[in-house]
Amino acid sequence: MIPNTIEDLGAALDRQDYFAGEDLTVAVHLALQLGRPLFLEGEAGVGKTEVAKVLAAIADEELIRLQCYEGLDVGHALYEWDYALQMMEIRLLEARGEGAKATARDILSRDFLIARPLLQAIEAARDGRRPVLLIDELDRADEEFEAFLLELLSDFQVSIPEIGTIKADDPPIVILTSNRTREIHDALKRRCIYHWIDYPSPSLEAAIVARKVPGVSQDLARSLAAAMQKLRAMDLFKPPGVAETLDWAESLQLLHDGELTPNMAERTLGVVLKYKDDIDAVREAGVEALVG
Image 1: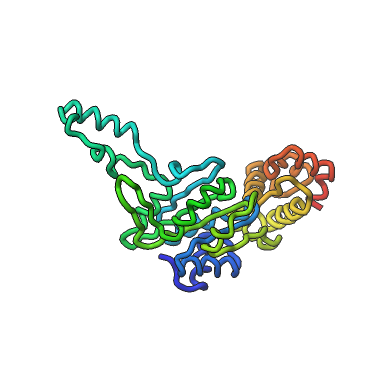
Image 2: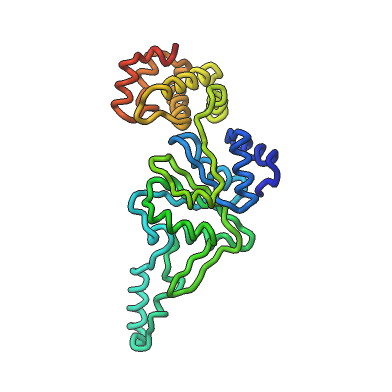
């Protein structure tokens, strides 16, 4: 059940181990109460996608995810016909001697439609249900797909020529995310509640590590958070996010090392940095500087 107040929502997010600042909590609350999509931008790994997962858990609703990519079209995002099933139906009609009387309607009903994430969300938003629709990394999709989303996010309905209009009873909970590899059109943003998720402060990041990685010491959590701040201050191609901080903490635990030493940082750089040039830059600057 979605809480009706900001305070209750903040408490619910905390129970799900999601550390949301007051500004993010207010943005989520407004999106939920106004029935508007929530558009989250920020660097990779700061917890944008996690917002959708946490809200689905809080609302006890289905999480429907559309992962965007270059070349994504309506057929893969909305619906497509099940051609194999249609061919099977044609053969069955012929086997029963009904082929001559068959019409296009015999294979163009809802039974032969494969619902993709957008249509799944529209159909699931009925009988008081509000599934969580996550449109992840929208900046990876083409601008043509953005234009299609404008109408869908306004009316939450789709017209299928062979079937008719399918409409949601109530708007689903919609979360859109972007890593800002390109700008999203203003027309789409205007339909949403917007929030930028920044990297957490060192104290907050240490608290996240302590909560998310059971058994980690406070000293190690603080050391990792401080090291991450230094890494993000460097001119790296891909600065590490909070997700990498958690991976680092879990890796050190797995190696039975409760302390971030220069030697251990050197051996585990590949946990937090994913590009050779970034690793080389850190080594050139001196790994010792991370744990000073």
